[in-house]
Amino acid sequence: MFLVDSHCHLDYEPMLSDIKGTLKRARDKEVKALLTICTDLSKVPLLKSIAETHADVFATLGVHPHEAEKTLPEKELFAFLIQEATHPKMVGFGETGLDYYYTHSPKEAQQSAFKAHIEAALDCDLPLIVHTRDAEEDTINLLKTVGNGKVRGVMHCFSGSAWLRDQALDLGFYISVSGIVTFKKAQELRDILKEVPLERLLVETDSPYLAPEPYRGKSNEPAFMIETAKKLADLKEISFDELKTSTTQNFLTLFSKVTLSCV
Image 1 (cartoon, helix red, strand yellow):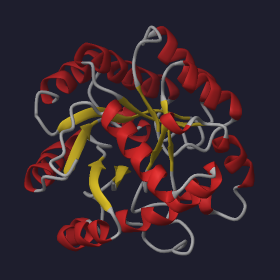
Image 2 (cartoon, one colour):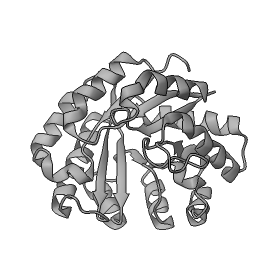
Image 3 (tube, one colour):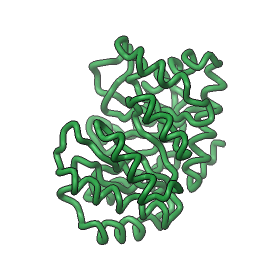
């Protein structure tokens, strides 16, 4: 079995200028499929091109909460998302959500954009990739109200509380683990993640951000995800092979539109 990087940004430098090398290094480290995540609608043509060019790369449609103030109004955003989701390599919506730590966009704009993504996910039966920071209660409330508790998805780069973990799991969401789990000062996070059932875990890089140990401080890339996966296997007290098998199957279950020739 192999690993899937469930969240990376191949349209960001330095990976964009070296996509072939980035993908080769990832494959050499057992990362055989990647999901490149949209943060701004202006990037959609580029993400389509990347996904169309590489059989093992898939993409999403979304507006990061930082960009919410600059995007389309809610109804127009919803229409755009469902129209573009007909593309065969567009397999989910996000990253979307709420970020009250930076509030680069006003809370109201973030919530409006998040609602449009939730409604699109329900309409198209595709998963959400959710970013939440310092906004746990509002995030869960919108998933329960706008999403009617029926929208499916993943809490990306999870670094939240045990409460958020439990609420997300109760909603049927998956929990995605980034390189943060390898950081020396992340013991509290490791304790929270240890209690996530294996069948609800995904692994990601969020590259070019959050490189795991021993690469911390460097620009992250999908090949480095093997360190995060090994740390997670140790945390769950399972073999690396079992971790690979479970997280890859979890990815394919959630992102059911994805088809991989290497499976």
